[in-house]
Length: 350
Ligand SMILES: Cc1ncc(COP(=O)(O)O)c(C=O)c1O
Image (cartoon, rainbow, N blue to C red; front, top):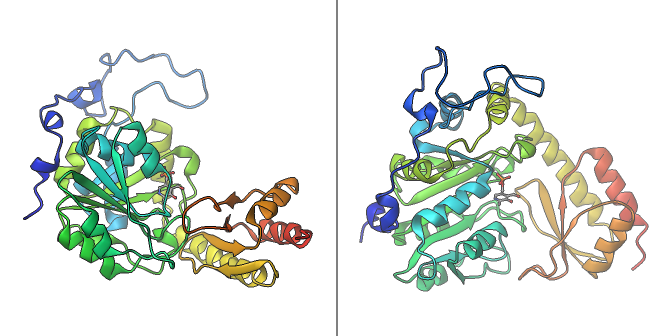
């Protein structure tokens, strides 16, 4: 059975008439704008913020299309990737009826978003080394399964997911396969955006919050077929990316090559952390990372976490997460921050 987007879509969404904003009805840049009830006199903050921003962020998409080697109409921009996660559930999953498949341990927002939208969750745990179990995933699929979320590199484990397993899921599932690549810039694995032409059931998510260093601006990317992108645009709030954010993201895109240095520095610091952390007797295992953080298995995770907080070093205790018993997740910091973390760890008495 082939992928059928029209069938996957919630029927009422197909019939929705989108809100038509002032900037939808007239998108030209020159003129006297008396159409959107804005304040023509200026802003109460320094800068020019009195006009509504481009609802489709076309300048960003044009530039991003070049950087990511996709077409501009294959790009959706959201208020963080978290907005895309929520919109996908609202577009494709009927509350109280449909389900999605999650692969724990993984990023927490998929479950939270599903909960908010009253979408049932089916969980198929990863293996001990945090790889997919594609046969088990496909067995869990039933006629109400609409989306499978795969995170690669995975959060909180940091590893990249074997490509052949992702292909197996893409080849055998007629719903939507989301590959969340929030950490792809740090990975030696190429992005799945190259597969968009081949797989109409694929949606790739990335974010400006990590390697691009723009977490505070809140902007995430989704790449998919033009048809899927149109659906997300149809149901998003009209001006979901602020003008200030659009301005700053364009600036960052003009400086896209700077990412290479960030990635190099992160790699050097990650190796430094791995080497130094492995010397502590209470460290049992450091999981291989393709991201800007490492997952560390220790003896007594909670005690270490609490001790570090006393030293004002904040990491994540992931011990309560399935397959992460006694695991701590540490983001890669600057050399100064990493040394402060190691110094504090040195003071810990088990
Ligand atoms: C795997 C993964 N996806 C998505 C996100 C959310 O990114 P954004 O800041 O774009 O909402 C995160 C944030 O930590 C993440 O780890």
